[in-house]
Each structure stands twice: as C-alpha cells, then as structure tokens.
Length: 332
Image 1 (tube, rainbow, N blue to C red):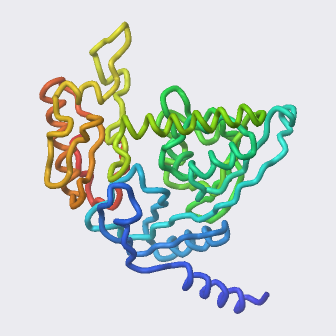
Image 2: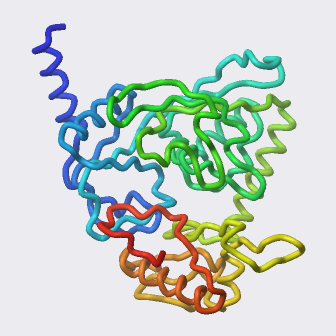
Image 3: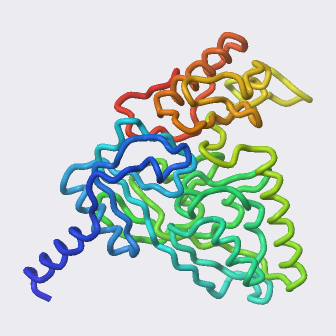
C-alpha cells in the first residue's frame, strides 16, 4: 500500500469514525450534561488508535466513556473527544498456569458490559464474576475503577490486560501487577493508558453449580434494587474516607464509611436542589428526579459536604468522576 493510499484510507476511516456535537445526556446514568464536541465508537484496536492519534494531532483532551454510571458531565459538555469503545469480543483461552479442567481464562473486550460478561461466564460454566451482578459497567470502566462489591474486587480475577497508549496508540499486554489495582484506584488513573481488553481467570464448574450461581445472580440483583436507586444516579457519590482522615471509632476500627456520617444528618429523601435529591434508599447516592442539571447535582453535593464538615470536621470527597468542568466544582 502506497503512502498516498494509506493517507486516503486514514481520512476515510476518520470521517466515518469521528462524529461532531453528540449529546451525552443519554449516555450517562445521571441523564445530565452537555454534548461532546467530538465523539467516536471504535470497534477495533485499529480504530481506537486512529481516534487517539487524531485527538493528539488536533491537541484535544480525551475522555473514554463506558456505561457512564460513575460520572457527572458538566452542563457545558466536553470540549474534546469522547471515545466509547465498542470492542465486544469474548474468547475462552487455555489456562497454562493451572489444570485446564479447573480453570479457564476469558479475554474480554473493553466494550463488553459486566452483565454480558457474567451471562457469558455462567452459560459456559465459569464462576466468580456473578458477585458483581447488577452493577452497571463495561469491562474497560470496571478495570479502571477496580470494580468492587462488599469484600469482592475485580482484581481478584484479573490476570492481564491489553492497554493502548494515549500518545502513540501502541497496544501492549500488561500484567495485573502493572495495573496497580486498589480500592477505586488503578494505574489507568494516569490518563495515559486505556483498556482494550482484559483477561480474567475463572473457575470451571458443573451444570448444577452454574444453575445455583444463576440463582445467586438473581438474588444479588434483587438485593441491589431493594437497597439502592437503580436509575438516574452514579451510585455512591463520595468515596469512603481513608483511615488517616477520620478519628471516630466503631468496634475498634476507624469509621471510614461516608454513608455513616451522611445518615447521621437525616437527609435521605429530603435534601434537594432543583430536581436533584439525596436518595431515600441511601444517603451517599444522589438522584436526578427527571429534570435536574449537573449544576443542581453539584450544588446538592456541596451542601452535603458542608453539612458533614459542620457536624464532624471532615469533608467528603467525590468518588464520582467529574467530566468537562473547567474548575473543580466541589469543596476540597
């Protein structure tokens, strides 16, 4: 292929790939926020690379979007390129590190949802990931945040990942150690690398065990729907405190759970700004009742921060990612 042909092919690819002025309101769980100046949904690593290199050439900021369940987008939108990966392949690999009869490896594209992954796993008699049932996330977003639920974390199952470098578009395989997965934390927070795929090690099981796990999946989802708001929210808005940030003790341990302090304020289902309200189900979850703006949600969150500070002398910090804001909008 000649250089001229390569250039023409690249231009055609970019013309088809890069969209302009795309609404993000319907692409995040809060159902708020303005548009993306540019938007792309790459279905291959090659398209992912093309989008990143184009953004680099145009000197544009990049945000990679999954299900949009842990983000709040500015009412002004995002003045750059939003990439929502559509890499949706799932492949079963032979596990060379243990007996193939007991375990298998699943290589999963960044665009696959956790619900799709759990369903695929159970249909192929593979156990482990059902603990995350009912949590809205893509594989890319789940690895980024190291998805967790009670004592379970996605890092318990990840063995490696394919990442793409923001500046070069180079795709390489890295170990789980490289990812530095912690509580709501990973190496990917550096903003210089994105997930193309992740490989999970899961336990093989019998048909009966798989049927039991499907029942457990249903029960976990039922429990989540009863305990937490299921729409128009980002889940827990504030992260838990670190040990060094708090002094209150309970049963010999530091009280790090932000919801504990918010519960003490008696604001569930009552504290409201515009159409943004603190959920009646959970004090650390904010809900858009239908017509809230992102500004409403921010103003509500700031009031919550101030109330906790007034009562306990500590300031909750956001776990929800704040996207497209020109300045950090919350109390520090």
